[in-house]
Length: 151
Image (cartoon, rainbow, N blue to C red; front, side, top):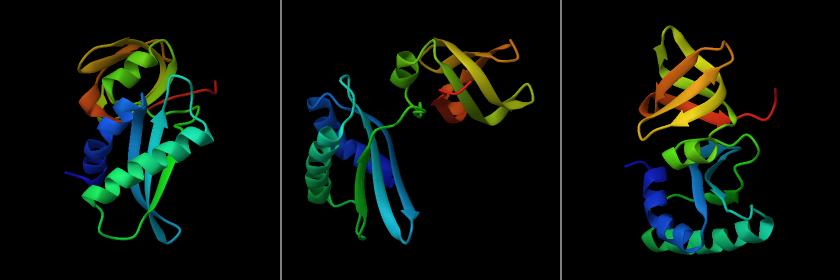
C-alpha cells in the first residue's frame, strides 16, 4: 500500500464526517523537503478557514497512526480550476464538462484525448473528443484526467 493510500484510509472517516471530499493525495519531494499534499473539496467551496481546520484534524489523526517516519510538511489545498479527476464520483460530478485525458495504453493509436465528458459508468467514461470521435475509456487505463477551463 502506498503512503497516499495509507493516508487516505486514515483521514477518510474525518473527511466524511466534515462533508469534505478528498480529491487527491500526493507525497512528493520538492525544494529539499518531503510534502504531503492533500487536495480537498467541499459543496460550499474551499477557503483558508476550511484548509486550516482540515490541516489540524488530518494532522492529528495522521500523527496518531504515524505512517510517515521522516519529517514532512502537510499541505491542505483546493484542487483548483483545472482539477484532477480520479474516482467515478469525480467523473460523475463533472459530466458535461470539457476534460483532457491521458491513457496508459493507446486506444486506436491515441493516448491523449480532449473533449466533453458525455457519459460515466462504473468502469469507463465516454469522451466526445475534439476530433468528433466518441471514445470509451476504461477508468483503469487513465493515467491522468482533469477538467479544463481554457479553450
